[in-house]
Image (cartoon, rainbow, N blue to C red; front, side, top):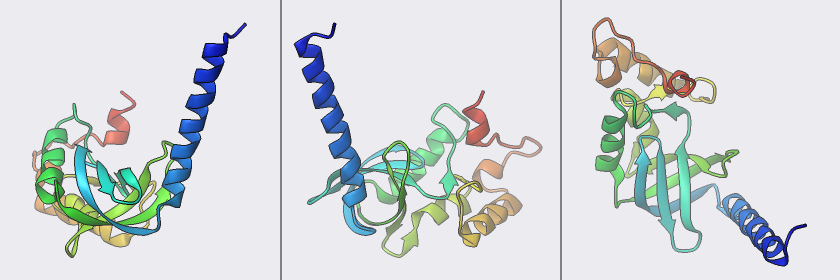
Length: 164
């Protein structure tokens, strides 16, 4: 039998989870917020005065994992671009992990595009809906930038790395 204490903890946990879920859905399609923390090359935390801390997964792209070759470089590039800055977030959706999936802009720079174009990320074709993202990857490959700079050694996409 579950004790009263355990039942209370379960109820509180359930409520907190659901409040957090609703919070992501209440965030409007466009917000301006400051960058609180860079988690990795494609995940950041933003701080908004009204909506609080917002976890954002960059839409349409995938960067190397932290323990993967070029993972640290991708996170560092993102950090240099937007760490501590006020950015514009265009929400695309909310994913199954309750993260906002979106496109981040700093000034007039599309950060998602920038990371792919400069060889720090792949076009995540499974989710990508913008031709310019795939075009950016093709240009970076052709110019042998970043991920694509090692001759004869194709980089392992993160979605394959995660399976290993």
